[in-house]
Image: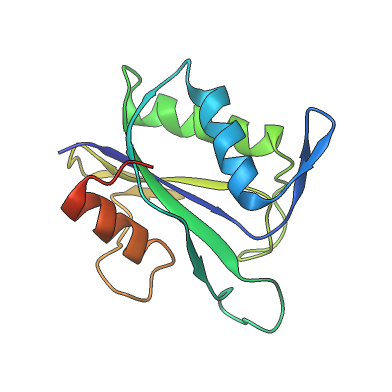
Length: 144
């Protein structure tokens, strides 16, 4: 078991006065989140078409990290949502382009539900944006 977090982005963002592509944003976000969690393993980066309309926006860059944290799942969710805002995420329409998306894929196998949030997120099908990085990390514990 472990705590798995999905990272996704398909827009550049500004952070500390510099423009960051998604891969840079992921590194900065994990550095920022380092006080609240320890990264144990990280998948490689994967590119996937935007959903539901790949023609409407740029492809997504996705990754998955396994972390250790003392925070409860709901505390961790709040921390992740605050980090998204720090990197320029605004809540607009569902499936809109974004500079950073952070989701808890699994929290030690716990089943958690709130009105607008469910954990674990279903990554069992190859159609999910984070399926391939999660599968690779989950099977091999790749660290990059």
